[in-house]
Image 1: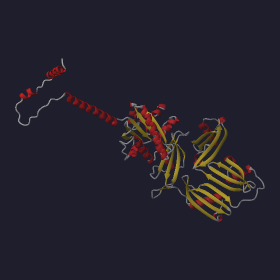
Image 2 (image 1 turned 90 degrees about the vertical axis):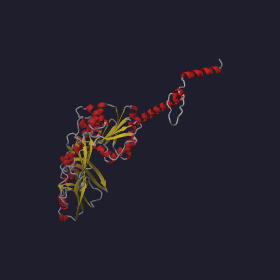
Image 3 (image 1 turned 120 degrees about the vertical axis):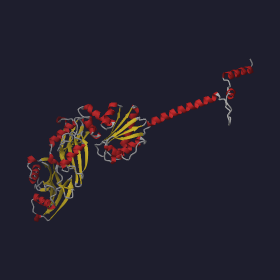
Length: 541
C-alpha cells in the first residue's frame, strides 16, 4: 500500500469515528429571521488548551490561598511580662498578628500603639520603650521575662535568643539595670487554660508552675498577682512561702511613717526576696524629703525606717513635719554645750533635711572655741555635735599620756562609761609636731569621734552623731560576723584575718565584715538593725 492510499484510509476512519452532523442538524431547524451565525467545528487541541488553563488557574489559586493562609496563621506566641503582661501572636514571617494586654497595667503600656502588622522586633522595642517610660524597668532588681511558645522547637529557640539580645540592648542603651529572663514554652493545653483563667501570659503561667513544683501549697491565683521580679526571686530563694506583696509592703511603710494613703506621697517599692532576710525596700518621696524603709517580706515587720515623720496636715491640707523652730534649736545646743547666751560671740541656725529628717544646724563661738550642732527639728534632741579650739596648736610634744589615758579622756568628755562603749578605731599620730590620739567609738545609737592631745590629755576636737536607724535595733559586731559567715557558708574556725567595722552610711547603721578563707578574700556589708546582707563580694586573695 502506497503512502497516499494509507492517508486516504486514515481520513475515512476519522470521518466515521466523528461524523459531521452539522448539515443534518440545520435541516431540522425552522427558518429564523436575523443573522445566521455559522458554527465551526472545535478542534481537540482547543479543548485541551481550555482544560490546561483551567487547571493552571485552579493550581495558582490554591498556591495563592495557601500563601495567604500562611501569612495569617499563628506560628508563635511571644509574651512579655514585668508586672504588665502582654501577649503577641506572630506569623511565620515574624509579623505581629495580634497584641493583647492581659491586665490593666498592660493596657496602659499598649495605649495608642497599633502593633498589628508590624515586624516582631519593632513591636518588642516599642513595648520595652513604653515599659521604661512608665517606670517598670528602673530599679536594678527589676526583671522582664520573655517567653516563646512554638510547635517548632528550633524556631522557638532562635526567637528566644534574638529577642533576648534585642531587649538587652534596648535596656543597655536606656542605662537600665533591669535583668532579662527568657524561656521557651512547650505547647500545653492545661497550661494555656490556667493562663486564660488567671489573665496571665503562658510564659508567666509556666514560671508560676515551676515554683509550685517546689511548693505545691502555694496557690496559682495568689502567685499570679506577683510581678516577674518577685516570682524570679522566689524561685531563686527556694519558694518557701508566699510574700506579703508590693502593695501590702507599701501600705505598711506608709502607716509606719504616718502618711497613710496621702496622695502627695510618691512611692517606689523593690522586692529583695532572695536576700538573707527577704524584704521589700520602700521609698517614700514627699515635698519635705525622701524616706527609706525595709519591710519583712513575710511578717510585715518594719526592719528599718523612721516612724511618724509628719506631725499632720495644716489648714492648707499640705503635710508638714513637726518643727520646734530655730530659737528652740539654738537653746538646745547651748544647753548641751553648757554655756549661756551671753557667753556666745555669734550664733546662727540653719534649717535643713538630712536622710529624710528635718534638722537644724547650729553654729556658735565661745572665746576661741567653735561649736557645731545638729538638732532634731521635731524633738529638739541633739543628733550630733562638734567643737574645736582655734589656734590650739603647740610645739613638739613633751610627753605621752598613752592610749588608755587618751581613751579615758574621750569617754569622760562624752559622759560614757567604758562598759557602754564599743571602740571602732584608735590611732596615735603627729599633727604639726604635736602628738595626738584619734579615738572613735559607739555608745548605743551614737557615734563619737575624738582628737586628744597626747601630752596633756586635752580634748582638741570632738564629734558625736546620733543615728535614728540605729535606735531601732543593733545586731552588734558578733551578730554581723555570724550573719556574714552564714551567708558565705563558713564557720569561725574556717577563717582568718577577721575584721568587723561599725559604720553609718546614707542614714543606715551598717557593719562591714572582712575575712579570708581557702585562698579567697570576703567582704560583706550588713544592715546593722536587721542583719540583711546589703553587699557581698568574694575574690581570690
